[in-house]
Length: 372
Image (tube, rainbow, N blue to C red; front, side):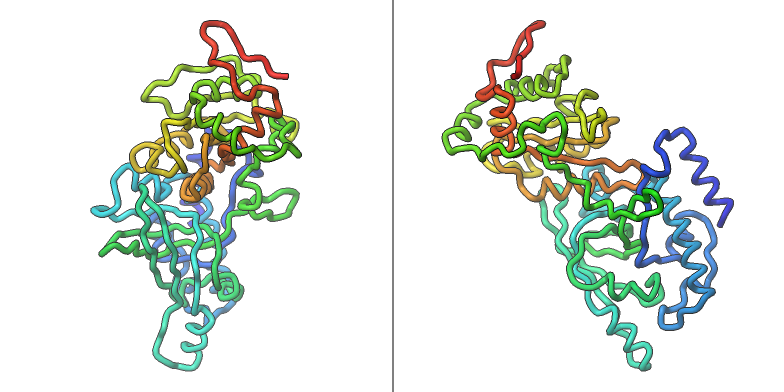
C-alpha cells in the first residue's frame, strides 16, 4: 500500500497547497474492499472483520486504510456528485463520487448488538434528501458492521449529521441509492489540533475585512428592497467591485465561469482570491439552482475558478438548495474553498454601509464608482 500512497502523493507535486491547508478525513466508516478496487492498493484483509471482533490488528489495518483514503481524496480523482450529475445526468448513470450533506443515521448500535447475540443481521441505515439539478431525491443506504472504523463509529453515526461521504450513487425508481465507501468529518490540522472544517466554510459578509463596515448595519427596509429589485445587475456588480477596490470589471458574456474575479478582497488582514456571481432582477423572486444554469452548472463553474472564496449575490432571497450546493462544492479535500452568500438584505446593507445605495448607473470606459 505504501508505494501506491507515495505514487498518489507524487501526483500532487505541482500543487502549491501546503499540508496545513489541505483537508483531511477523520473517518467513521471505510469500505476497505472498495478502496482497494479504486486505488489498486492492498489493505490487510483483517480490516474487513466486523467491529464486533475488533482487535489491534484490525485497528492497525483500518489506520492504513485511512491513510489510503486521504491520499485518494486529495488527488481529486473522485468528482463531487453535483458536478458528476451536471456533466452526465442522474437517471442513466452510476456515479462514484463525493457528497457533503445532511444525513440521518440509525441502528448502528443495534446492528452490532444483534451480531454479538447471534441474531439475524439488521444493518444500520442512512437516509437524506439530496437536490441534484433542481430535483430532490430521497437518499437511502445501509451500513455494514465490517466497515465501521472504530468503537466511536456507532456514537458518531447516530441521528442527523452534516457529514462527508464518498461512494457509489445510482438513481433507481426515483430514489438515490448509495453504497458508502467513506464516511467521516473533514478536518484541518493546525498546530496539532484537528479543527472541523465545516465550522468555517461559510463566511458571513461582515466578517470579510473588505465588507467590515457592514457590522451593525440595520436590516434593509421594504422600500430599500424594492429599490434593489429595480436596480440592474450590472450596477450592483460595479458598486461591489468599487467597494472591494477591483478596477477591472469584465462585461458579461455567456461563457464566463463567474461574473467578477478579484485578488483585492481581504480576509483576516490578507488578500484572498475570489470569484463572484451576481444575479439581478432577471431572476424573479427567490433564487434556486434552476436559476443558475443547466443543473446548477453556473455555480459549479465558479468553483472551477482559481479562487479561494466563492461569493454568490442575489437581489432577493437565496434558496437553501444553493447554499447546500455551495457547501458541497467547497468540501473538496483536494482543493477546499470557502463561500459567502449575499441575499437582497445583505446587499442593501453592504451598499448602504459604503455609501453606494442605490448604486449609480454602471460606468462606461474608464469611469469608476467612488465609495465613501
